[in-house]
Image (cartoon, rainbow, N blue to C red; front, side, top):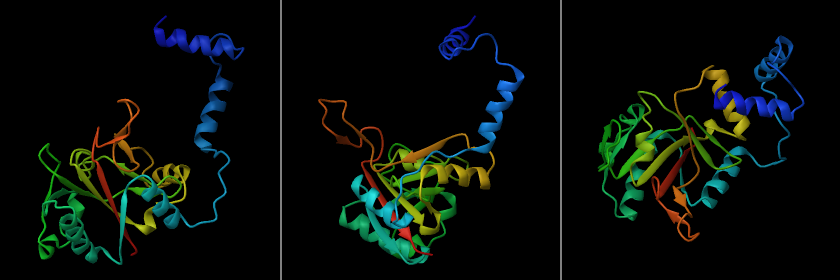
Length: 216
């Protein structure tokens, strides 16, 4: 018996079950998983966008708003200038044609390298309850663009903000059926309190997360 089998056998023993699971037990588990039954949810009357903005700010992200995607390059240029950052970035392939050059920003669509300072991504969706960005890995959406640069700029269409984590998973099931190889959840800048219980930003990833909410 392997270590895994021993652990599972002990769990079954504590549950008052013995032997291998029967067909009826397996069928019941599969039916439960297929139903994706949801647990009780907290009551929040605010709309998902307002909740997301509030939670993102509380997590040390910064938030700007754009009427359309066409307004994004100018907003990003101002953000970079205010923080003394270079007008140079890597981005997801779907974003490279946004007209960055008109705002003086040089953008390359590729995976990020260790010397890239700014990464610009979209999101799969965002979660209002927690202020979290959800991204799915893929050829056109390399995770390195949000993970390696010191500054991560996320473009978030308001229509892709859902109320809860459960809604985010339901959206993936409805639109994709199966999960991507990696699903990343980004809740503000990277942080740790491992050293003397002092919170340090940027320990394991970007220490700036700037969210641009796009109305349409």
